[in-house]
Length: 328
Length: 263
Ligand SMILES: Nc1ncnc2c1ncn2[C@@H]1O[C@H](COP(=O)(O)OP(=O)(O)O)[C@@H](O)[C@H]1O
Ligand SMILES: [Mg+2]
Image (cartoon, rainbow over all chains, first blue to last red; front, side):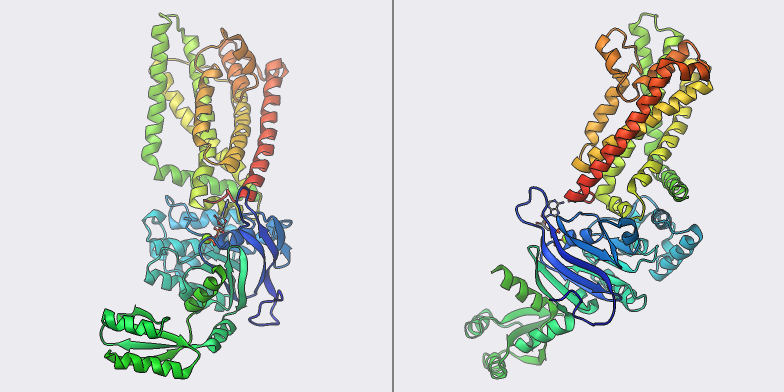
């Protein structure tokens, strides 16, 4: 795989990481094992992987918060480790699980503090802080202590604080972790807006494939510190699309245990789940005939079929296939 | 000009923090006032009336100086501990300036904040014990110099906290023991080895000089020409330099082991 991201060509690189390794002292295995990738200017790269894959360590190395055992990170042409101040001036980061804010202080005081230590000139800082509060719909809570905020509001403010110096690059480690569906949706929209309207280059790590599927251009999947896949989202989904489509058979009521057992013996990989309150049987195959047989069997077993849909696999299903293959 | 902006930001943060923690803030002052009154009463009883006004003043000056140092060191170390949990420490490391500059400004603001509290505590104690003190410029100079050495000490302990984490209770034990071993409260002349050791300990020479000035006021010129004055200057410089070295080492260690954030 070449360093230039597979998504598009001819744009310049915002972040380049080369042969990055991290072995924590006293850890049995390297947390990050020789990975390389690039983030194009104005694009979103989703770094995916199960717990302990090395995502957070990678993000922190890019931000210069963890020193690698070997390898390099360049941010808009500046090396993070040898030209820290210049490189870091282009970066905003919201790290995983942490508050990233002073809870006892108000939203406004947080903005002023973090803008000041980033050396944003005062007049500009006040103007930006107000703009960001308005953009994130927090103006009404400007002088409220952050600890009284909901998780979603806190996360929005943390992102606002990381944008005060108008960085070209934004690193978001699990930005929707622990948020309710509505708040997660808002964060998702913000990320989309920042990438498409503000041309930010964004690296995000997430467990929520839905988020990556919505906003990412490129996908980097890692597991146990090593690269599993590095590809544009489109081509990754297309590749899996060619390996097979999925048919969702929606039923009007839950099938009996017995029926399900019979179905499973004929089609071991059938997946039963509730999809938005609708009982759904999913089956994946590259063979059209086999799919028809599946639908027929469901029908002859006496299940009442409401709807039949063919679709591509979701990123989540692709991700599970990829990481399972790797671990087994 | 960078540091002015950071100094202002730190001052503002400290002010808002004090307001947010106002109950704790008031309780803290009351605790120290009552603590000193209690100890001083105890000394009075134990010494069977031999606890003179001069000795009371010496204890008071020692106590107040220690109180400021205790505040500066403890707050500097616990701020690193808390902010590691909060993730705000990593945000400080994401600023395009050396973090030790932020922490120097922070320690300076903490120092000013504790000096203001000390003035308040001292005033109340002087009034309630009916003592008067002849405060001189040279005493203030000695006090400030001693506190610069304390900032150096805070840097050393912050470096250790960065590297090893969970050093706050050790730091607390350390600052508390300083109250007794430096002779801040009660004279230590009867323990010979301690009188030697205290010259090297943080705060030791400063408290010694301040108490000597109660006994016999010194002019600025005499102060800087005395062996003790020169020793204090060297002592503070050595602690400041040591602080920078240990802090830099701790920072490096934390960057290698991922200790800037929660893990
Ligand atoms: N500071 C640290 N010290 C030692 N080991 C660590 C540290 N941080 C992470 N690890 C280990 O490194 C591996 C990768 O962790 P992490 O980067 O947090 O993965 P992820 O974010 O993908 O869950 C894990 O096995 C974790 O236990
Ligand atoms: Mg993580």
